Length: 148
Image 1 (tube, rainbow, N blue to C red):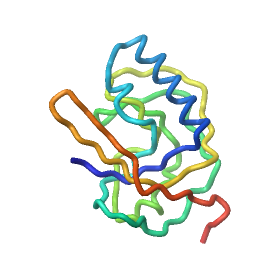
Image 2 (image 1 turned 90 degrees about the vertical axis):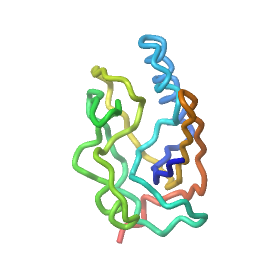
Image 3 (image 1 turned 180 degrees about the vertical axis):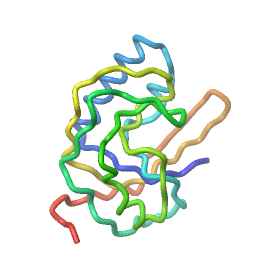
């Protein structure tokens, strides 16, 4: 079982990203495009019930105009390392800043996506051979107006 701190999006953006990933799945047929929720992975987490207080990254954030494949993940890059402070506060790290899409090696142009609303949560992933199950827990909305 793997636990990660993630930034989860508001319902509308989650729905739009699901539709986008569904269309990618129809093109490529790679099941990883449907396996996990699209989110920003901040890094490995200790499984705990209470999330620590963290500062919200400066919103809105925007993705770049092309998907990227690195570290075994297809993602939409977000420039300027906006998650350095929150990762330090959580005591974690991850090799890229961007919206996780799947585990397929491809790249393509895409309209930039604006992120205006995020919540900190824990993503738990369980792998059993080809079967991947996941759960989002301990979600806490981050207020973009609170910067220290």
